[in-house]
Image 1 (spheres, rainbow, N blue to C red):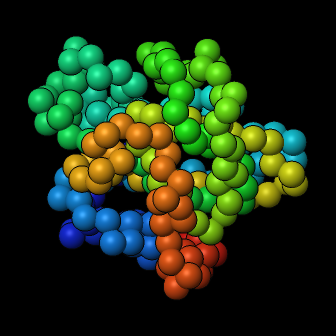
Image 2: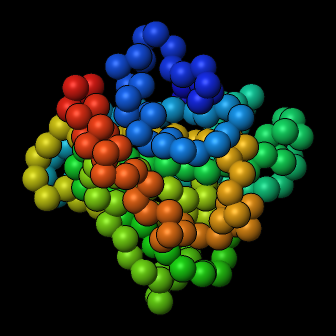
Length: 198
């Protein structure tokens, strides 16, 4: 995970991704650190690109160098990491993930696994390519799905610390009102950036 801030931008070795990141962040106001993950891989038809099974990604804990899926203080090394809300923004070049929105019961296991949580009654949202999909890093249920054809797929994920929005503070689940984050202009900019960066 690459650390950066919205005002400072990406380091020079990742400058080609700046347009993509700018489109994903849009008008989000956040003073805290942002953590970037980029995954590019050739994926065979009928195979999921990333983690299969229902899960949440969790908060990125920089000092531990790992995601945390519990609010238990023992998992965090500083008060700031525990106190700061952290949103997640996902974008991809090809459909390979779906999320579930609505109220549900249960908490993630220590590794983020949510296979024990029922999705009955939840709305299913395909995370279509070319958009930035937004949620709470600790509550956004999602899973990888098999790709319909063999492709070279790009996934960009941002963990955004200190992102002060009502739905994140309240711990709501994958708020449909935030989708898509990108406007039409940003949508086109994102697609162009993905094409030029891959």
